[in-house]
Image 1 (tube, rainbow, N blue to C red):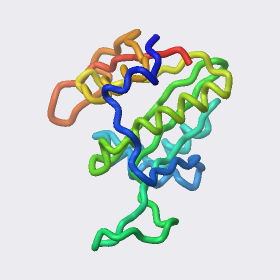
Image 2: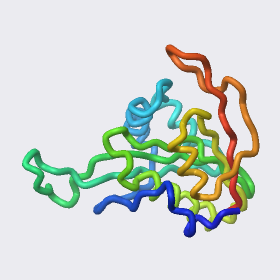
Image 3: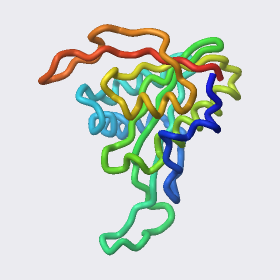
Length: 177
């Protein structure tokens, strides 16, 4: 296993003011909206609610401070949702079911902060192994996950459908927590 603290090649330090909040059922529509901005087959709020009802489920929402049109900061409580992570699982295993950062806010450290927080949370819950799936053609995400010590353990042929392209395999990744 790779120690995540020694492998930051694909990581970006979190942007100033980035906050992580726990997801509640009140966030389902917001998470669905963010999911739709990031994936071709976006989830609706009912799907997000179903995920939150799964065993061991939790979610994190990443926000950044809003800025006025002139670039000046707004009040401290004015935050823009920029990404999320949704996790579920049983016993000593969890799966990172969905992790996304909206395109306009990528490479600002939100994904790094979300993964760090997920790993910390599942470790504190006594989890020993964390899984996820990623599209084979998502090189950026694969590099990021590798920097956290995730290693390939399987493949799901044609798992991700694409509107105007052939389906793409999912690569199953895992890491010890």
